[in-house]
Length: 178
Image (cartoon, rainbow, N blue to C red; front, top):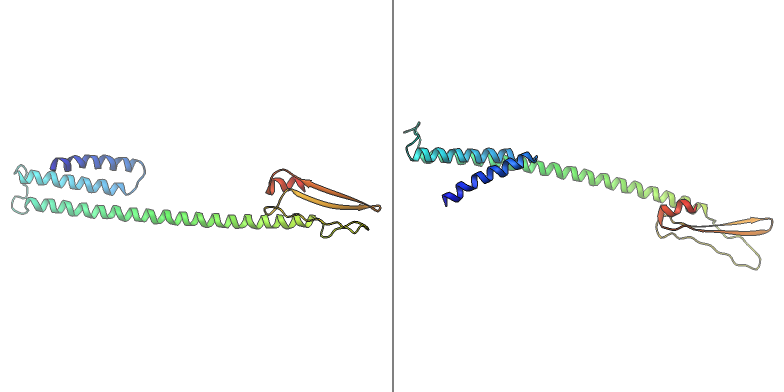
């Protein structure tokens, strides 16, 4: 059990260093916490085996370990608080980006509505009156604007009808059709 625990500490330190190099800011707290715990365990073992007793009567071996665990808990709490702050900051950035995207979509929608009104304004509002003929025309694009266009031209008592159908949909088809 102790061998596994002691083996995990270098693994945690290595993972913490890799995370710190990768730009994960709270990793500095995790590294400090594991380092303090490792040092306190080391001092505990030295003190418990009587190899190192600078405070022979002032502190017991378990007190050294308790101080180390307390410091580890404080450092891990600071790391957690830093992580929470980072998550809040990212959430705020994502919220701002989403609002910006919403405003851009709203602006694009307004531009498309203007383009639709302009395109519809280029088409005849009423059909010409020709005796003996019933003429009607209507253009309903699938989206705001489209590649279909028609117009009537009356000149010298003659009627010409212009029909246009550009390939595609939306603005890609609407601009060439007009």
